[in-house]
Length: 286
Image 1 (spheres, one colour):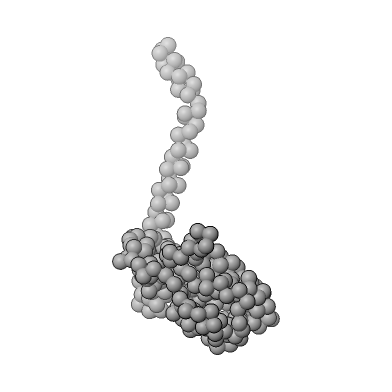
Image 2 (cartoon, one colour):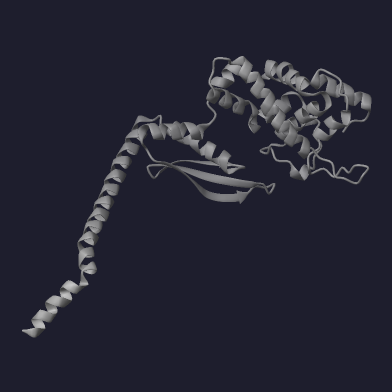
């Protein structure tokens, strides 16, 4: 990946804004698990452990930054804003912005333009900074090299990205039934699992979405559904379906109530079986 250590130090300096102490940490942060690189001790090297650490550090640092930036906002707002910044799609873009995508070492067979290799490497890179320089350097790197250049916190905080949550909130407010159903699961050309989810509103199909996780497919399906519910004619269709479903449910409840009343009438006869026997005995005597 790097021909000379001097070149490596300069390469990382341009990304980090400081020279690495332990340069091997940063090199390992860019090793995808598909690589066949082995250490002197015979261990296979990759960035998975650094990714795990970086994920936790990234949450803490971004939480710290958001907390201090929006001092009058409540916990829910802070949580949503942080989640928008640390989501995989955003991290993928950030990795490309700072040039990590050109430095990652991986097997060509494992690459897919839809996976999260770049975002995972970004997290591992943050983990490497933490181990090499500590928390304050992580915070400075994310503030000065990432957020100041690539992320507008005010814009991000207002942007709605949780389409599923927004759709559910709308359904609860309007007392409309919404369901998400996994309709198919298959693999793409790179053998990655793909999920296909359908959103139904009052049992009417309103959108399908695909993704490399169930959550992603649900979000994509919800996004399509949210577009449809902006249409007045479609809302009228949903309202009609809601009324029909309510009428059907009411009929079912009436039938069930009738059955229960019938059962209640029959129960005394079942309990007082001796009453019938005594009456029959009197008739026999006559």
